[in-house]
Picture 1 (cartoon, chains in turn blue, brown, purple, orange):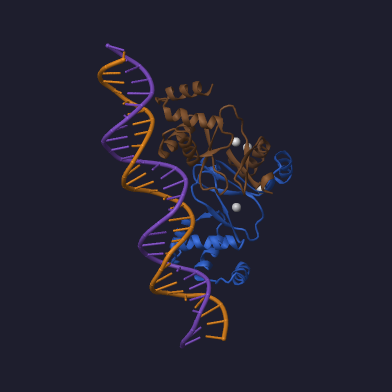
Picture 2 (tube, helix red, strand yellow; picture 1 turned 90 degrees about the vertical axis):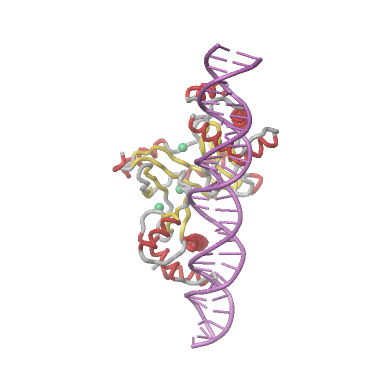
Length: 140
Length: 140
DNA sequence: TGCTATTTGCAATAGACTTGCAATAATGTC
DNA sequence: GACATTATTGCAAGTCTATTGCAAATAGCA
Ligand SMILES: [Mn+2]
Ligand SMILES: [Mn+2]
Ligand SMILES: [Zn+2]
Ligand SMILES: [Zn+2]
């Protein structure tokens, strides 16, 4: 269970499990799209959870530091999104330019490309981002 | 020549060729890395070109609308970068996490992947971003 | 239950980018 | 080249996302 995993991470870094951290984690756990800070804030308000937007920002940053959440910056959205890492493997996304829906792409074509790039550029490749935009079935 | 191409685009949209637009274009033309607005501003100041940062923003937006410049948002940089499209073909980038150097990757592995994604998701794919980070030869 | 360090909410601040508006400058015409 | 028209510029102010300072609240533990 996730809450057990996070309790461990929090404990080990001298942090505490709080009402708001539980709420943010639970929301990310039941949501299947990456959420922005303001979306997390709005959703929790609707769920009658009292939380400040500042606390949302601080919470996702802590979860990121613990390696439980990853931050993604989709093309020209102007705000970061966050999704649970727990139990999901490396993947990418496509976002509908009309309605904003974001769908997971459970593939990554970059394992072999990395070697080619390292040869050509003499860089050591550390990470990559790959995001698509387009039109979802409903918005075509 | 680039200035001829842009004069045409400007004319056709009821716009004018100005001292500042010339300066921004010339800078982008002689620079081989994508530049942020504040970098364009700083470089032009050093080159004794009087220009306001607001004008830089407006200028890159106009050039983007004319299809002469493309905007890219590298991972967690917090600001957009702009590079000339003219004469360069579709490509991607790798940025050094230490010194910030950005190198063109003259490849794109996504022509065939697009079809696969469209089949799997029923989206129509329109565009994609792909950026790498790592460590350049000097910073390893 | 009480102690103490961490976390929270509120207000203020930072940084990228945009907008309103009067002054300035580019283009077409005489 | 001078003039009239209209786009563009610079400055100030505003927007939006995200961060920071600090006193009050609360989690973890004895
Ligand atoms: Mn995802
Ligand atoms: Mn490039
Ligand atoms: Zn990948
Ligand atoms: Zn590509």
